[in-house]
Length: 163
Image (cartoon, rainbow, N blue to C red; front, side):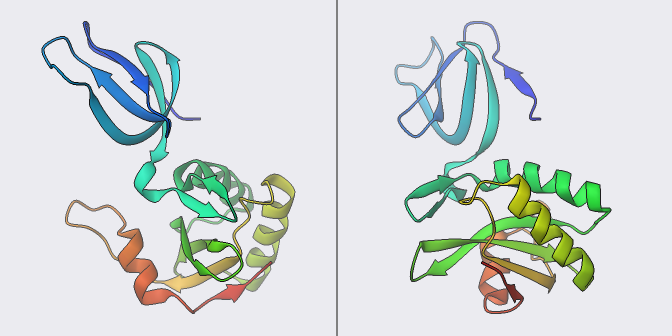
């Protein structure tokens, strides 16, 4: 579960039509509109769920990769899979974009089968990755975060196809 965040005194929050955080501070004439997708707990507390920039529109359904990663992380833990991973998307003729699971390094064929089975049992049909890419070397940004786009750009077209 994601942690709750509370604002400083005098600052209130809301969300826009994308469910992105809107911050109101008395010293500013206009609210600050972010690209952080959040769930409001109250007018001073929120739960971060992901970034609007990363939202995947697959077959008309919007999927927040960071929220999906939390679910998949539980499956990885249950199976004892320790590799780093992220959820991304690749262009798809049928869906517009398809969800892909990108895993650093190699995962045994048996664990891929178990992972695939558990995802089908535990995720909604729109959340299930259509492709699992393994044996991937991740590219990182200067501040140490995974560069999802650059990693996907150099790896697309490899890995196992699942439907």
